[in-house]
Length: 177
Image (cartoon, rainbow, N blue to C red; front, side):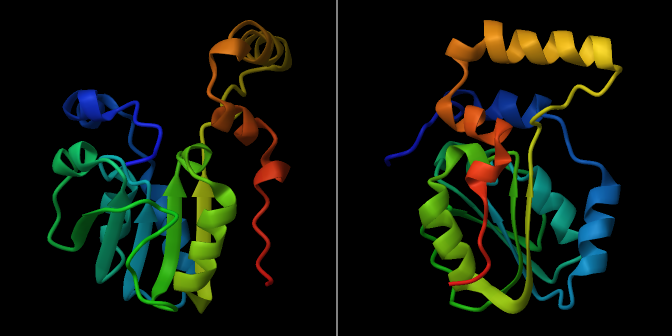
């Protein structure tokens, strides 16, 4: 498979120690979605977002390019894990009530991914993206130090995809066309 695979060798540990998302996030997503038949969670990793979505949706399809990640994913009878790239799922067109990508937008080819989202999402569906970008909000002095360290000192060590997330405008999803 042609994707940046940093986690397959450590998929078991990754699923054990990766932070989860707050229940309030899924409560909110539930409140803005009209139908709750099918959720598509892209680049699911070990399924933290898929697990949160399963509380509200009849079925969750969770895709990841790493078979090791999906083997070590959280189990739930409503979740079907598939080894597929987010940019090329086997979902039917106009079938998903919500498409999510949780802290993984930086790993996908956004041009191809957005085309896939448009294809699978229902007309009244919701596309939700969240990330850890700019997570330090302590106070202006501390935030400045952390952001400077991350962007200036560590900059050469960050993957280009993560750098794109810092400028979210570059990842703009255009709902038309």
